[in-house]
Amino acid sequence: ASDESGGGARELTDLIRVAADVRPGDSGGPLVNSAGQVVGVTVAATLTYRMGGVTGGEGFAIPIDRALAVANQIRSGAASGTVHIGATAFIGVGIADSDVASGGAVVRQVLPDTPARRAGLVSGDVITAVDGVPINSASNLSDIMDQHHPGDTITLSWIDRGGVPRSAPVVLAAGPIG
Picture 1 (tube, rainbow, N blue to C red):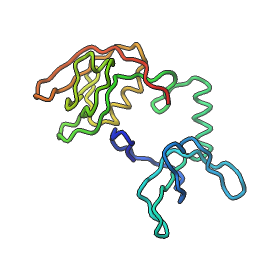
Picture 2: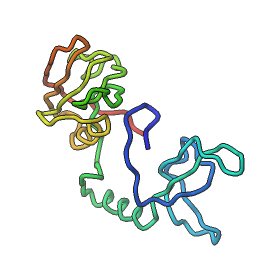
Picture 3: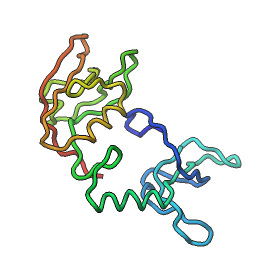
């Protein structure tokens, strides 16, 4: 699956596949069986699914037992590699996978008044590492950012549009909610 911002693809596993017209904004909604029981939580959709000649969204949901386990983990305040507790760290870029063999995350957009803008990143730069850890895709950068919190200082490394390697300390901001 890939997100609407072009942030790269992720493999989604162990989900309930539903032939339902799921649309953006439906995530977090209940998946109910014919007996009215909640059996899952909607998390993703395709927008190119065709059923009976009608184009619509095919939905995917987390089984309710897994959703409840994550909810209980969040309530207990126990962060993990897949559950982030608290405000999200933010550098202020829109990213996509890089076309180069060495990987990285290509910067598609740099928002104004953000840590990335202050560090000097511009559209077309390729982020290559965070704290010396190589970035091999846009989703990999997102995963690494999820391990940090607003106020943390990271060393961001990138190759600018001219091919020049750059690096700068960046103080992470609080990301948008939602």
